[in-house]
Length: 105
Image (cartoon, rainbow, N blue to C red; front, side, top):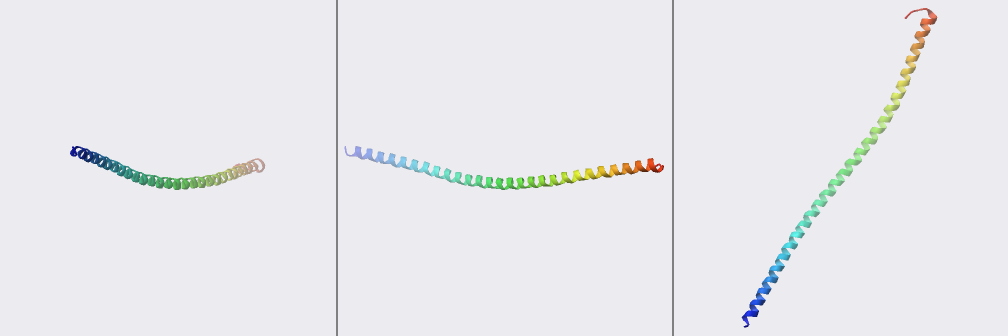
């Protein structure tokens, strides 16, 4: 009769040990997954940092292009008015020459 409770206790002890091993295995698996997630989060952060730097460079280049475009637009406007003035002056000179001097061009 004593053997039966001892067998039951041994079986119960084995069940507890096996359950504990299963829990430890699962906990180890969770810890490994957590470590992998930490590495992936670190990689994502580095990628975001790289994107932020690239975005800042692109913004700087766009602002530089805007400034250059404004300069070019101002220069073109001045060139157009200079061209209009030269053409107007040439027309006036041709008109003066043809009407007042009698010379045909």
